[in-house]
Structure formats: structure tokens, C-alpha cells
Length: 288
Ligand SMILES: [Zn+2]
Image 1: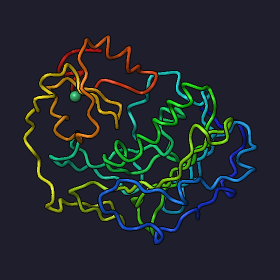
Image 2: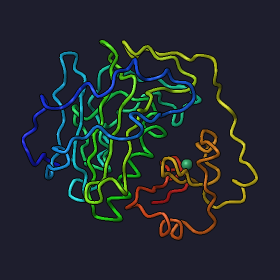
Image 3: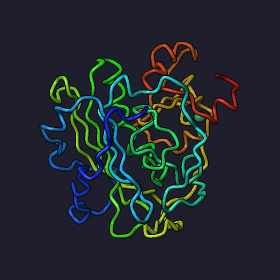
């Protein structure tokens, strides 16, 4: 979607948080910042529709992405999947134990589902699979579902945080606040770590290697999985047939077991709210 006002990136606040105020990653993929309250100003809240991306900096890195998300900014067409642009630090590396094997994703700052920005260099960073799917997605989905259900709008800002001259962001700050109800429906301010468990990343360059703490585990369906018709990942919004190897990488607390037909599942977990069949399953089972 085109911006509805002239972008004014000089006004974008690049210094909302300092990386040295963020504790090192331990095992939580995200942490609350500023007691979970966004840094929006009254001026931000008083603005009409807008959608802004920062110019790439001298190293080619993306900056703050800021928009008022509404039904008008959300996609009306199928997702653009053929991303070509390589964000800074981009490399193609595969690990057996990473979901779909690829360490790095072209990671949207403002998710496709919220602003329909596809291959826009100003909206892309090199992000780990885990950042993309488990770190950011639940926060994005919360906004998407809120807007979908209420037709309200949400102030939404994503700030990639690069330490010094690193080419790979150390993490992203995500701030969101619903406008019409003054933050009643949606309000958060979180930092998501750009990490992949089991991989040591050199953030200066993007180079990486296994750190020896994670091995590929042979996937053996549990009794619950074997008895279900589908297993839904409530973190990512993706659902699977129970024979899918991707279940081996899914955390147990994200699993919902569903019994019924695919049509019944789709009625209860509609595509409009971001639920979708896994690509591996789609190929394997020949379903739409
Ligand atoms: Zn699957």
C-alpha cells in the first residue's frame, strides 16, 4: 500500500532503546520493554492514516517502519512470496534442526498481513526462522486479529536494533497500541531477539555455525498427535497433518489437537485470521 502522507524519516526516533539496556538472550524469545508501554506521543496518536519506512542507512540497513494499521493497509491479494531482495547480512545456510531448515528468512519489519508490503528493501531485514515465526508472529497476529474483528486501527512501529555496524540486527523493538479504544484492545512494547537456538551468529557479517547445543531429532508422533486429524501451531497460525515432520520442531505448548475435516478446521480457524495449512503438508497431501 502506498503511504498516504509524505514520509518524514528524520522524525523517526531511532533511539527508542539502547541495546545495552537489553539483557542478553537466555531462553525467552522476547521481553517487555518500558513496562510494556509503547513510546508513542500524543502527536503520533493524533495522526490520520500513514505508513512510513526509513531510507536505508549508509550500510544499506533498514530502519524504523511505522504505520497506522487498519483494514485499509491489510492485503486484499494473495501474499507475494517471491522475495528477491537480499537484506544486509543475508546468507543462505541450512541446519537440520531449524524449522524448514533455512536459518535466515527475509523478515518483514511490518508483516505482510498488516501492510501488504512485499519485496520492499526498506521493510526487510535478515532474520532467523525463529525470530520470524516464533518471535514476531504472535505479536503481528494479535494486531491482525484485533483489526479484523473490530475494524479499529492500531499504531504499529517496528525498529530494527543494530549494535554498532552489525549487518544483522540483534533484535527488533515492536510497539503497538489500538487507537479508537486508547490501547484497551492492543497495547505492548516488546523486544524480540534475532536468535536461532543451536546456532552461533556473527551479527557483524551474518556468518554462522552450529554451537553444538542442538541436534536434529527424529520425529516420532506422540499418542495425542497420532490420534488427531490435524495439529495446529497456535504460535505461528500454521496447521499440519499429524504425519508432518515439522511437528518435530513445534513446541508442545503451541500445539492444539483438532479432530474433524479440513473444511471444519478452516471454518473454525479461518484464513482471514491468518490460519493456514503448512506448505510441506500441502505438497504431501495435495490439498489447497
Ligand atoms: Zn506440515
